[in-house]
Length: 305
Image (tube, rainbow, N blue to C red):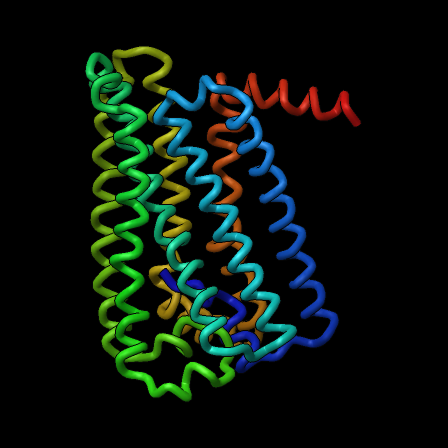
């Protein structure tokens, strides 16, 4: 997934005025702080109530929240760096890019796992306790990270093997393409994106339609799970828009040549920031159990102020 996002071509080809640059940076910083503040409340609610520790659904959810906080923080840092420092050391940039890629690629995999958990809970309820255990959930989270590392780390190894030593001491504008620039990396990335796209969407469609058929004759919980899968699908759709980032940039340049920089900034907000604001809606507001404990946490926090 391409974390170079909107600020990439904006800064290189279409430099913003000082006022517009400050406005954009203020917007992304405010959104980052707001999302991380809300997610921190969700994490604190999870930590304070042991009931969530034994539920695979909430374990996967809180992993997604932590992952989103990491992803938002890193992409916003890269955005700000592109306007302030402009160029940084290749090794530092590569570290930021790798961490951001791990977090970005974890998101659709985590959402697919949460969709499967919903499917098992609704369509195979008698076996849910046996299949979805805490230990298996933790192993699944480890597998998510292993899959992302298997996808991302070859970029590092190819770069280390093909680039001269001086390159790692040079200064570059911090993008995935400027650090991991070998043509084989681009081909590998395209293949990986296609595989991710097919597998994750297959899981989303499979679980949604199975829950949909169950919901026609089953309980209110099944219908709620169906709506949750829909929200997951929308979130995955936004997250996976980053797969089409190069094509999207070319299309925006053709469609909006005079407002190219602003169009890319809007895409950055929609693709990188907006998906990370959906998690609090799905579980912080819609989930009855989590909402109850979240209210207690907020009321307790307000009473101590």
